[in-house]
Length: 116
Image 1 (cartoon, rainbow, N blue to C red):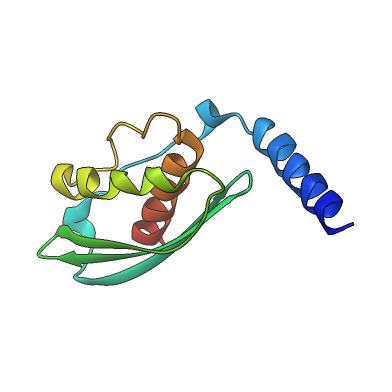
Image 2: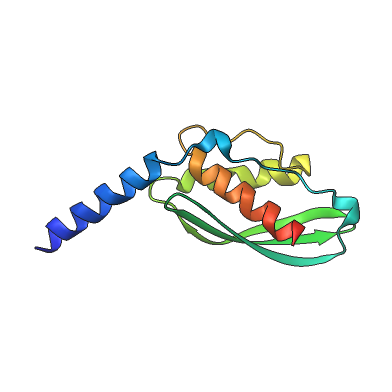
């Protein structure tokens, strides 16, 4: 019975994920010159993907981004987007191929952290 329940859960998650139009998710890069030094927490949900991040701003730049939680299914490799964000000091970076949903969830969580 447990295997059947897990199969139903996974099938449901796949169906929910397929209903999310990833092209409709917009990511806006905040103006870092307007953000005071500190650590900000943000969350996002894109279909079944849930992300919580801590973003540290120092001297008007993102100095670190820590992924606190990332419920992602097979999108773990999207976490590789973090160094590109810090290097670009922008959320206008390419998503990780094959992990678009998780990439957008991470980007949206960072946006939410810096704009609340």
